[in-house]
Image 1 (spheres, helix red, strand yellow):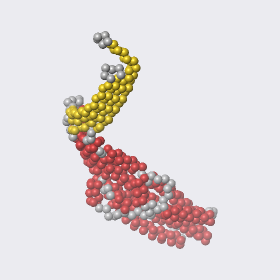
Image 2 (cartoon, rainbow, N blue to C red; image 1 turned 180 degrees about the vertical axis):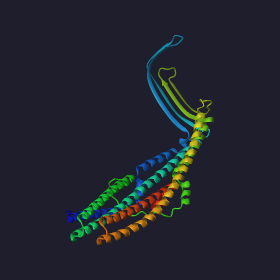
Image 3 (cartoon, rainbow, N blue to C red; image 1 turned 120 degrees about the vertical axis):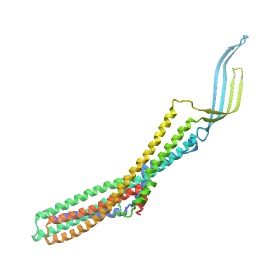
Image 4 (cartoon, rainbow, N blue to C red; image 1 turned 180 degrees about the horizontal axis):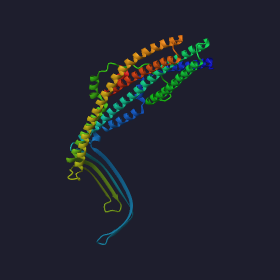
Length: 445
């Protein structure tokens, strides 16, 4: 015979544990806005994206595009000690031993490309487009992170709501045991029904433990997205608020105008056009200005001239044009045209895919709202049915199995409603992400 006193102590301990945990979690309540703020600041992937943007910003300069001249300063000094001997045609000879010679040179040279077929202008445009791409990629990564954080947060709410439903179900199962024990005491009940009630209670508690494990895993996952200690304890809000006022046409217009993935495809198309301009510039001549100032000094104890020094300024213009390079320029221009066409096809493909995703998601959003309404009605009916079943079970007009079936119907209806709200919120989040307005999801508007 199971000892009710021992079980009561165990149940009280478990209840106190959950109450203490809930009080501690309430002190560490994490809102969705706070979670997003932490994630945007700490996430490692975003930090890497910001570094790529900084590199692109550094590269976007006139000097890197070839507009500015290059200025080089060179200097050298060489000393040597040599033995020399020579004889002239008239028979005179001279021998030098240990003659020291010193050579000093210094120069500053300027090289400036004045014209390169307008390639420098195309290069500067390309660098600017790359910077815009990096900036848009950062926005794309931020939107994806906010979306993932939102999913993880709503999933935590879903699991928490299911845990709350299971805890309420355990209370009902406990009341069922008390009724069965009272029946046994007065001789109207059976030991079989009481044992079955205990088995059902244990099954309910096992389900609760599994959901607690799911909650722990979901909390760790969210902490990972926020780039903080996986063991950080926190709680989330207790309900999923579904927005029923999304308008399809407005969201579609924002999808076409503000979607980050489409913006990236358009920018890649612009870069392909600019790269083609750069390659076409190679067919034009290149004109460069060269200028410099040189200083040279030589001292030689054993030479004909003991000292020689020169200084001077030079300036010149160089023109260069490629006559033939094995049709390499034509090949690269043709490949650039193909890349430009591929960029156009990529844009059309992404636009078609996003339109399909949008239509499917909006339909899923509408279906989810209908399911929420339906499951709310089902839950009301199941709750009323359970109340009636509990009263009849006290009076002994229905069996233990019939009461358990009503209990299962109620918990199933409650879980279906939680899942329907979760699915509706996920569909809303996906629509917000596609239309580039996730900030409204976070603010709840």
